[in-house]
View 1 (tube, one colour):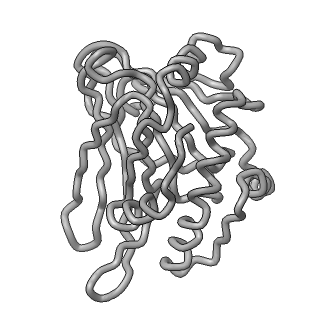
View 2 (spheres, rainbow, N blue to C red):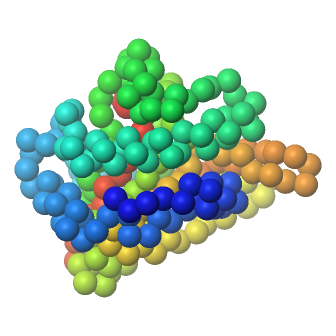
Length: 229
């Protein structure tokens, strides 16, 4: 995993609600993660999206113990993001406190009845897409998450851009289309985030989805930091 400029990351998240971490993983790591998808021993459940009106495509949730490289990535990203999460909570007038280490945060999740792991690998083929949604799995919600591109756009697939929509109070929603290269990660708000306006701080809501894949196969790794009920 490449190094992360925490201050630059904070600046982009505060201003835009998302930030790109270029080449967070190298192609070999991406291929190793993508190859996990075919081995059901690594996963606790599989979801066919059209059965639930989520879109088209499928994904699988990894089981505990997570593969070591996924567990390491989840822990390292959390440690960078926890101070930002705490500042966001304070700005929104919330009393939540996120501990510095991910294992300590998971203890809070498990005490709240959220003990199922949420990292997942998503697979899209031609014609597949993901409707706008939020990854909320219980009372404990870490306010940031990550998606990492495991495939190579243009070579492995076409289309399939990440779509973020910011729902602003008393204003029309703002969409943003994020184009990623293999190994890039996008960090973005799970649900609500603070936004500084002329009259002070206010809340905006974020949703995310994936536009239609035109050809090929698209694999991504999703890193959600809270566990599920």
